[in-house]
Image (cartoon, rainbow, N blue to C red):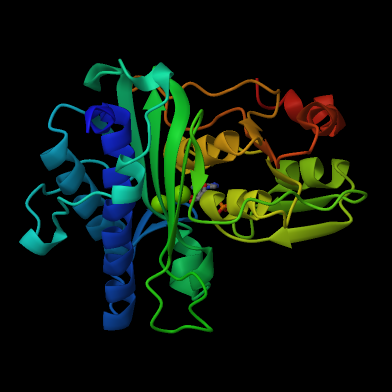
Length: 307
Ligand code: AMP
Ligand code: MG
Ligand code: MG
């Protein structure tokens, strides 16, 4: 089992199981009905599900990988968690895969784990449950290269007992947990925020002249629309997204041949010392979509607001 000892493969395999456990916590908080909402800032909520899911993820990953840097949206919290929140298992199908050569020598110090325990909190509190994702991103030497996106409420309206769906990706290895698809040619479908819009967000959207606009919550959820061929591009001319929102989605999207950058076309750095906001906005395109041509459509007057 020599290939299984590679740190990156073990981290990815553990993150899949950990994300599933966090998803169960998110469903349990909702079923109990007391969301414990706290306002972190303007239009920025936190619930008991955000807090507990992050405690589960950080406690589990730090038990398995004691020296790894983990940065979670909800900051420093009580590290003591109920014993049944500690996950020690990993995804066996990922562990059985061959580690790409580029990652064989990656050590703990090269990795930062970016955790958004519940992406789409506004939508969670408003009952748009299928917009919610759990995001665990692996940055390796500053690049978003590995990621897990778990949907705790995938297909829940059809299958109320569903335990969701978990998607993973590693650049150089591939993706799993879903059927990667490209969007149709000959039109432009754009996905955008439904709860954090402003004049610049709207100006960038309109400049793309979409044939159709899909307004949904969550960075993870919107990138999933690109990966399943339901939208061509995701644009967000705002400083509102953070590194934990984009690390996992960027990695999975890149692993299937799409692209995520700032609105100038540059990649974000995900080292542990970087600022958390994605202060130059977000532009993501599906596989088969020309990222450069979409970038060119965003007016300089909008780009100049995000130096
Ligand atoms: P949205 O597309 O609105 O769901 O946003 C994607 C992610 O970025 C979510 O985690 C939001 O909470 C976060 N986000 C976007 N804009 C803001 C903002 N103005 N303030 C706080 N968080 C934001
Ligand atoms: Mg988020
Ligand atoms: Mg969140």
